Image (cartoon, rainbow, N blue to C red; front, side, top):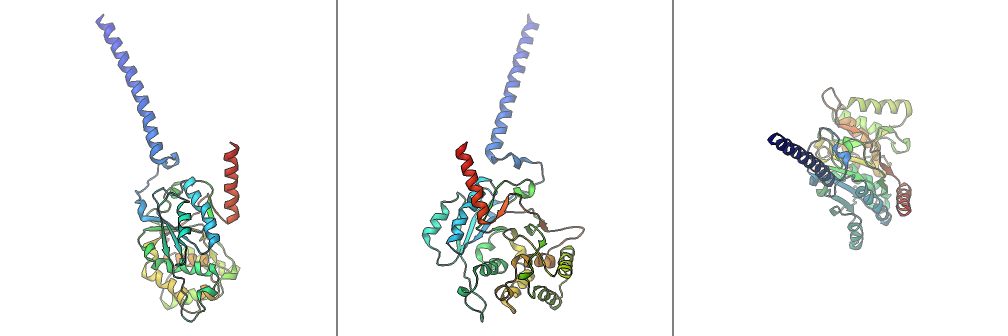
Length: 330
């Protein structure tokens, strides 16, 4: 009888532990899901811890149309969990930006939003800002003005998005999990380089070569510089990055040599951004070629797109109209 009693107790204990293990497994999965809400983030990668508050999204608004487009942009950030809900979103605007429009934007997202005035001044001797195409002023800001703005300086990285852009799906690998940050080795992320339009480079290549000679600069990313040279020689144009989506490591762009280069482009003759419509996308490639690195020990330019990123108002409108229609049908 004692043997039978011991056997029964052992069997009951085994059943108890099996049930307990099953319950704990379910609870563990539930906790993981609640913590992140997205199993793709559980990929086994070496991912450094990120202080969310040190990394932000930056969006520059110039007109009412930008504000209308913004609702798709912010909606996508939330819907596809491109960034975490604690990630700050910085809206840059002119000092005439109405308060009621700020309230409209704040209703578009649960992320913390801050608003920052940008003074669209142009170099002395040129026409006033009111007489210059808005796109030129935006590029002027993102080439040199942003890195002097106190709101940008408080962050380690900032992901720049255009208002008329959006994400239509989640990312697929470890690099997309970090947004709006990057792994520590990288100073810049964007898609490219691709072949640029020769309409936006009048004098830009010669300006760059002269600047390099005058300042005794040897390109620190020789592979990218080789791409620049070969495209110039063979096609008469320059490569571009997709600057409607890019991630910047702020301390790199605030480096003295990098800022001096950018200020020479925007604030000195021939004032190529404002007078000759030099392209910001081409200038990004030149900046990375001159000051980025790519050697046997390190490369710090992440030339990679986000598979879900789309640029263009019509694309974003059509995507979310389809999503809404599908949701109602279901």
